[in-house]
Length: 192
Image 1 (cartoon, rainbow, N blue to C red):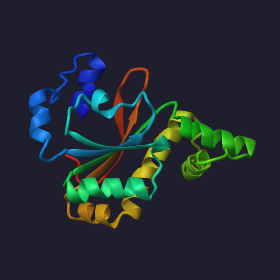
Image 2: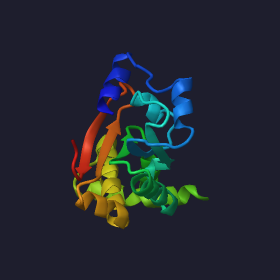
Image 3: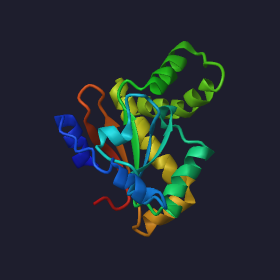
Image 4: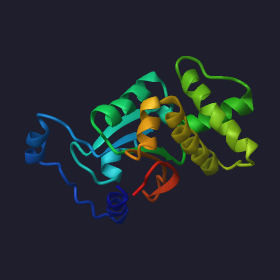
């Protein structure tokens, strides 16, 4: 994936696996090599920024990559049923969910509707970052990525078991919107 990101950053994408032949080959079944759990920000199109094609990634997205039952179930499906050996948590700078959690803490007021749920799920990462002396937004985003990686492993017995067996790795990446680079923030399990 990082090689694909390097191609994207350099402006030399190969656009692999995006033709009619690939589409036909995938019709009977999918065999993605990774689950990508990322923020739903429109600037974070996983297949594009990692220069991947049809059937390469099993993508799950929520605002602020917050983890609820639906997201966990989807990730477990990718690992347990599709046998993906890699789970990537993808966060990014200028994350609206992190900004909303910061604003909520500073103003002492939660937003309404279901946005409140997103903010409440991001807030522990903001508080953890602050407790560690991290105040800059990029550092807080990185902490939220680390917290999400840990939360996935703690909440999903299926994922934890596969990591313990050496069959799955979970990594956290932070994407920079301006230059398109993804960098490693966190890793659990055999990365290689």
